[in-house]
Image 1 (spheres, rainbow, N blue to C red):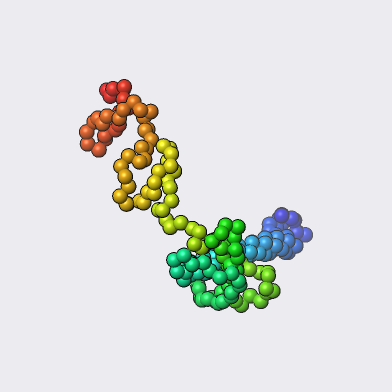
Image 2: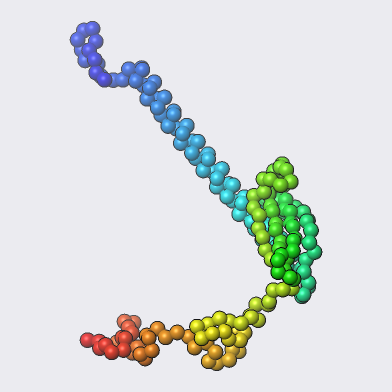
Length: 196
C-alpha cells in the first residue's frame, strides 16, 4: 500500500497492521498443516500396530494347528498369553468353540498391545478367526471340479491319470493356429487367414 507523507513524498511498503495480519494467516495455516501431519503420522503408526497384531493372531492360530496330532481336535475354552513381536509385547486371548460341523472347531484370537490398559472385552486391535479339526480333508484328497464334471483326486505335480481333464479350446474347436514369420517377430496366425 502506498501513501504520501506530510511532505508529499510517496512511501511504499506495508504497515505494521498488514504485517501482523499476514503473520496471523501464516500461523493459522501452519497450525492446520501440522495438525494434519500429526494425524497422518498417528494413523500410520496405528496401521503398523494393527498389522503386527494380525500377525500375532495368525501365528497363534498356526501354532494351535501345528500342535495337533493327526485326527485330533483342540480342546474348547479360553487361553491368554503374551508374545514379543516388532520390539513390542502383545497380549492375546484365544477362544476355541465348537462349530456347527461335527469334528471342526473355530479358533478366535484377539490381540492388543500389552501396555494398553483396557477392559477384558474392549480395545482389541484385531480379531482373527480360523478353523481346525479332524473333519477337514488333507490337501489334494478331495474331488476336483472341472468343465467335464467331477474327477478323482488331482495332486499338482502328482501322477494324475491322463485324459481326466480335457481342458478348454481357445479357438472354438477349429484347429490350432499356425506359426509364421521368423526370428523374434513370430506371431500366431488364426486358422483360415493368410499372412501377407
